[in-house]
Amino acid sequence: MLLLLTRPRYDTPTHYLFYWAGLLIEEAKKRGVKVIDLDREKAVKKKLHSYLAKQPIDTVILNGHGSQEAVAGEDNEVILSAGNGTKLLKNKIIFVRACDAGMILGKEIMENGARGFIDYIQPFIFPVDKDFFKKPLEDELAAPILSCSNQVGISLIKGKTAAEAQKDSLDKYAEAIDKYSSSEATSSFLLPILLWNMTSQVCYQ
Amino acid sequence: MEKKNNNQNISEDIMNLVIARLETIPSNIELSVGNEGSFSVEELIERVKKQDDIGKKMIEMQLAYLRSLGKLPTQDLQNASATN
Image (cartoon, each protein chain N blue to C red):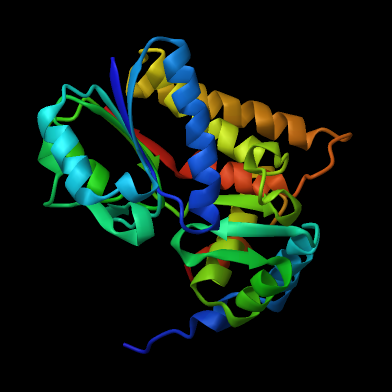
């Protein structure tokens, strides 16, 4: 398997996603999956389109900001949008960890022959503990949400289909909701956020 | 056709409920809301009071959760959701 990721890093959300997507790279390498890591200034349209056109990539994970029709890379540069680059994703499975792109972009990607697509149809929301800004992986309040979304990537790296990866991720959300619903749980403010992201995550296959 | 004033559709009770729920978030926490940026609890409460896009998303998120618990009258929730 050949996996391509984009990991821009220029504001708080992308800073967190940069590190959490780094865990996916570690997981991929552990499993012998080859990785193309378009991090920071490499997360630009020209490089993404070039790799997609020339390399036999199976799975694509895009982290960053999004809209209904587009996904951005470094410094909010649009790297993929409806009508621009979606044909390059034919026969691939795509996980976009960005807001809203499940609404229009994802549907066009599927119409152009992708094997599967997972993203959100609403803003992706997560808490950030300001005391852990420099150590995002140690932020225990961001972790429940980001580990549930990371599950999509982990399952895809394991060779599962988009539908299976979606199920694994939603199961993890359900477990987290159960955990934070218990009477002993603190941080119950996470529950609406978990439910929001869970119900906003869509899968097309 | 007369355009509805959306702000009037969310009752004060619902808004106060959402604000009370946001106040349970610790002060050292910000919420990252996609492209829109990161917001402190105080900023989120202000947005809810103004009922701008971020405020409406917060209302929608909290009401969706409460709806999942079946704890609010459906009519109130429908009125609130209609503004989003």
